[in-house]
Length: 260
Length: 260
DNA sequence: ATGCCTCCTTGCGCCAGCGCAAAGACACGG
DNA sequence: CCGTGTCTTTGCGCTGGCGCAAGGAGGCAT
Image 1 (cartoon, chains in turn cyan, red, brown, orange):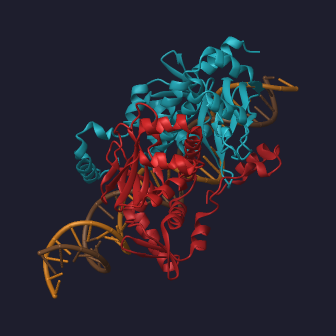
Image 2 (tube, helix red, strand yellow):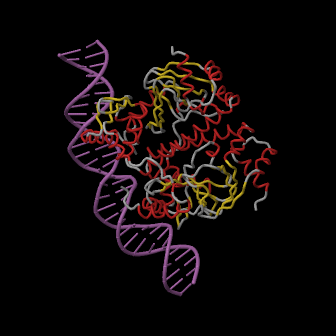
């Protein structure tokens, strides 16, 4: 059993509950159900009625989607402190993805109706939820754009850097990604095949950028990977004179001849 | 000038204002600013501070993103009745995309702070906004998945079907997509090059699936395109016995040998 | 130790889609 | 009616990445 103080901290750290005072957090926590999920087990299942909202209080989990033809994609990993299932606040929707525990997970649950009630009682929460969805949407849009415009190498480099940031632990000469990452996991994450991932990692290993092993990646030269990933950000268009936008786009389009 | 009744209908039809009574709609509309945007002009600019929320009352517009290297992607088209800039309700964020008018557009604007105030005054609006973002997120996730798992042909077929549905007008023997669609627009929409789009459309034209012209596509055999697009939906996983999920995924993965 | 299972590597052949270049078609304005 | 600019088509060569197949290597249980 996890101490209450830890759970409260968990909620406090979560953007959904930002700006909620301690008394309210106590009330909210008191209404939560806690459940332990074994590694490999399903937290929520794609297609099921979205009945519960949750916060991961411990452990890590994969968010995956299965397609009609049985292929699966790995959308992202979530770690302790992150929430899922905001969709449960809305009536009659289904989970759009499956969440599968990687480690043993502690999960705090609330019925969707309870979350909806919180939105009424603490209006800030509704705004928080909206903000989360807006930001997530931006992130997804960015990844969508990456998929359209970048090549496998770049996407893989960026994925490793993100994972190192979220789940990295310092290691001698590098950052170890503490998730059990198979080549196939990485392939599903960046949208390629396990062969290509393997080949690319081997190459980077020899070049001294990373250090790989069975289900293990250590980032030894983050700067090198960043160079491969390229500038991650979208052009901050408004940094230039406002009216120059159209001209700049045109010029850039004219100059973009090499796709490299 | 557009008649007030038309504008009210426009708001009523918009999911943000769902379940708002007529009196409230009047109040909301009274606080709106209306602006006309000429074809090709920018409605909101990527990177600018997200200061306003808007509803398109007339005309159609492109949502595009420019990348650091000057390439651009076309996220989607919006038509009269659709909203944009929900992000303006939140403090200190920037528009993540540019909206460019295709036709002459009439746009209703509210300052972001006004929208935020509406969320306080009419709590349903905040829930509506959340729902919109959740659904948009699902759609984006679906397109992300398509990009990862499907080939150009499928994505192009699906894009045409969607466009025909949203902006189609009945034509002799087919549905005309009324947007001025260049091959490059389509390429940016499905994530390919104008060459591939041109080649594919030529092929479909000869096969009698579509009828193409300069900036013009008529879908003559929607069923044929649907066959190419394949099953659009994600596997409704929970339709099978709940516990069969894992087995089914495993079986499907074993059976997915040919990527075709 | 031994065997087994899963994961990883790598050679090879292949093809979808890219991107150039050059020519053709269409629309519009003068 | 012609010129001009934009959009479209299509031949061609190329390559990034796919996917198979076969072998290797790490880890776990008995």
